[in-house]
Length: 264
View 1 (cartoon, rainbow, N blue to C red):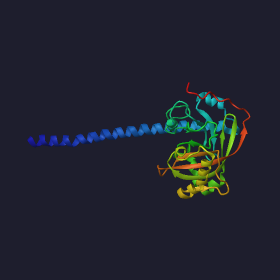
View 2: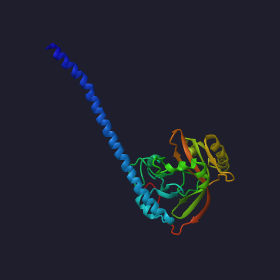
View 3: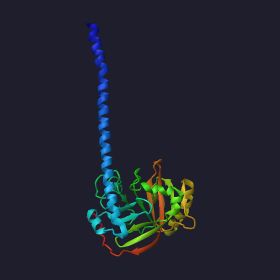
C-alpha cells in the first residue's frame, strides 16, 4: 500500500512539468499561428495596395488629390524601373519620423510600413540630399527589390528612377549603389553648404569600393540628389543605398495644389 502511494506521488511529480511544457507548447503554437496570420494579412493588404499603386502610376496618372485626401502626409511618388518599387512617398506631419516604419499609407499598423522621408528633408525634394527609406521585405515588396542593384549587370542596365510630385516629374540618374554602415547620413555628414556637399559626393566612389558596390564611371554624384535607403538582409549594421542625381524636371500636365502641411 505504501509503495503504491509513493508510486502515485512519483507519477504526479513526473506529470506536472510535462503539463507545463504542453501548455507552453500550445501557447507557442497559438502565437505562431496568430503571428503567421498577421503576416499574411499584411501581405494581402500590401499586395492589394501594390496593385492599386501600379494602376495609379501608369502614364503619370497619379491622382495626388485623391491620395492626399486619404493621407495628407503623401508628398510624392517613387518609381524605380526594373523593380516593384512603385509607391507613394509620405512625410509625417504630426508623428515622429519613425512612424511609417510600422504604419502603412492608410496609417494602419503594418509591419511593411510605408516609403517615407524625414522631417529634416523638404517635401519638394530640393535639399542637397533627400533620403527615402523603405523596409527590405523578403517577398520583394517595399524596398526589397532595391538590392537587385547589388548585381553588376542590373546596375548597368537600370540607370534611372523617377520621383513624381504634384506639380512636376523629377528624373534621377543612378550614379552609385553600395553598402554603407547603418548611420544617419544627414547627421554624419554636413550638407549645409555647396562645398561640404561636393566633398561628400567625391567620397561616394570610395564608399562603393570600401563597403561593396558600384559607382558609375564618368557620372559623378552632384546635388540635388536622392538616396534610396534600406536594410541589408544579412547584416543589420549596414544599409544598402542607391543614389541618383537630378537629371531633369518636367512640369506635370495637371498640377495639384499641395494641402496645407501644418500641425493644426
